[in-house]
Image (cartoon, rainbow, N blue to C red; front, side, top):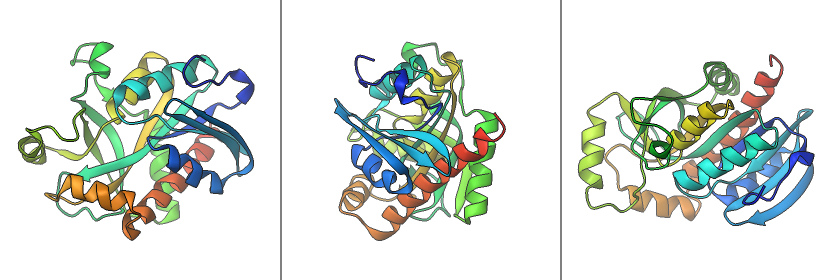
Length: 243
């Protein structure tokens, strides 16, 4: 494939899609028989075995356009199910740093998903894969929430505070940048998809300051990252047993 620089010799039906290339490297510690495919653009790829299951870890970069490219090219080389893992800001009270969010659906407030179809089309997680995510987090004992996320394109937009306030008054519980694109494109390409997010910014917190703390390895945020990595791998293992 022209962007991810992988082909069907990876021989895996399942992929975990972090945004951050460094998260791919950290997630590889959960795998055995690791094969490192290196970096192409924003796409960092590592393949390995998790409890007998071949899984590809591949970063998507930041935002919907590159995430959409990732799903498109993975679908073309035989990947059938993907779980996005990434960071998110809380849009309701009662959510702690390091809690996980299982995204049932995403508000398509991004540009990439709109390039595929108008906004009347929903961005939803595959029910069977989402159910496996729920089973995984419950068996692992991780704190989690299930609900709607809002995906957007601007980290520093001048209207962001007002937008966060607006969406916090709705049933939307978290905010990220990639879930809507991944879920929408996956629907079009008949790839099963779900999204697990790690809360790194508290409700009504300083989003940019929280992201800065995350980059420097703040303890609970990093704990949440390890939780979402393990949960995504376990969810795909559970899903593989019924697919």
